[in-house]
Length: 224
Image (tube, rainbow, N blue to C red; front, side, top):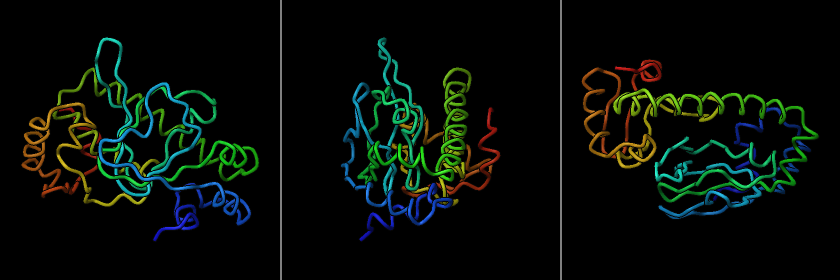
């Protein structure tokens, strides 16, 4: 069984921490399980934890007052998110929903802030993480406003190959068409049609519950 020590030592942010800093993080991290469809938090909640996905998949999204739904990002195994809200000590401005049964690591704000204030390695990681996250959110707005559905599917797939946000990504992604549809903000039928066309173009290979990406860079620039 995965322990808190295993979770911390395998985390992308642990590489530059000292042994004393790793031990401080280990003592603070706990694990929680969320069933498929469960909310990790609702928009407006105070979630005083920095959160990482140990296994599973979650969607970070919001619904406007007019009822328009918008997905900001997906978070797969190995990714950590929510550092902005923890740093600002504010309520979450988005919903976090488990798209499948998910195990999450939860680091209390007190531990997070101690690392932020005392660990140069952790602070350097946060700067890189926030920079990548800003780029992701700007791109998400672009996808939603100007790209047609197939391009949105392609580019959402490409995000799983950002090494800063999704460390250890492999060519084969364990994701269903339903889950990809929820992340891209399109119907399952659109995802099915888009994947068939992308497969014909030699960019992906699809199997049941798995998509193998053959050219991540081409997907990241896709606008056809």
